[in-house]
Length: 276
Image 1 (tube, one colour):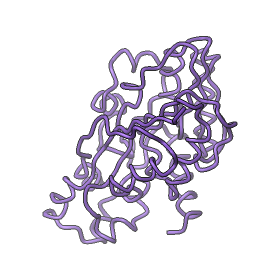
Image 2 (cartoon, helix red, strand yellow):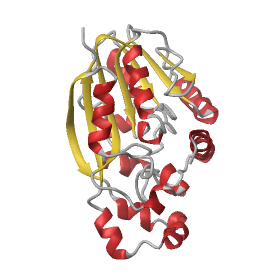
Image 3 (spheres, helix red, strand yellow):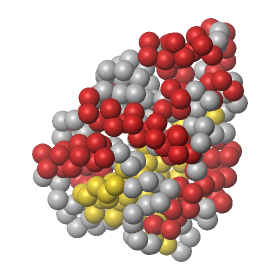
């Protein structure tokens, strides 16, 4: 798949998610999980009941694969940038943590998501949050702006992850932190699954090997790169979902192969620092 094709497919699918409050895998499902509610997904990946009740209704679409804020240690007055901010869930939680003297900037390439996020900001009276249209490979943000950059299950969708981390490095202030939750591979995927559009939008096909992911972070200039948490990704939930069954049958993945894939994909939290 060409980069332009990938971005168009991702943009179109996430636009539909924003318009329906569903997901790329079907109603009440997550792009990165099975047929469960957004609230259940969020609890499973590390958000508390207090987190879920602190954001406007419709901000949580259940599209994450972890909670990047759990270990972010946000401080009053800091500036946060969220890569692929969606309907604003992590932005609104960040806004409460950094307070009125802080600032949160969400960047998303899907106009429908931006409309939804801005609507949610209005409903919740979040005056220290703004949402900008842009690609995470070319952030619409000045150099040395942010104290911390977060992202939740979005960088895996980018066809140019090295460029994403270069842009994150540029936008961070010296001493700034990177804290992202994402999907990586622990073993290679079958070629047919890797090339599947549905598998790409569903987070899996866009993932790269864990070492390659971490190397891309370091290559951008970050230091102290470390995995703070790692869990296996529920591949079976994705493969068993009715909306991708046809593609799975076409690919010819056997039940035994699905079991093997269950140990091939992981959700990780990655921390890194831009040197002073």
